[in-house]
Length: 168
Image (cartoon, rainbow, N blue to C red; front, side, top):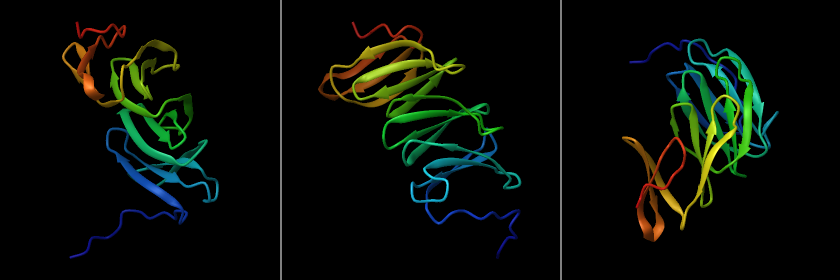
């Protein structure tokens, strides 16, 4: 059995990743540096394939993270994070970090090496930062804490509002 396509669109052959964001109702398409207009992230409507816009990036986009229906994040392989409005494909802000670990309340929890930072969603202003004693390999919101698995140190806990180490 085959199903008819709802819509089709032409994509450059140099795409590295396509992600679906159901809350925002969009697809993000990562364009490699050798693609026309790349490196960049294209935002397409999931309903009709309409191109909402393109955000140019400093390097190849790696992943896209859906914060909520109003905000997407794209990371690049040169450690930049882009906050993208899915409705308009406008870049709200950009900062240096390697990953988006979580979104809690009105802040994005970003990691850059051994530094964990909270940035306001509205304008990227830094709320707090914590320097970790070793590389982190998992960051998980848990109740009133942010639990971070840190190298040989095991679990550490931080207050998501102020970054205070709660590990005691």
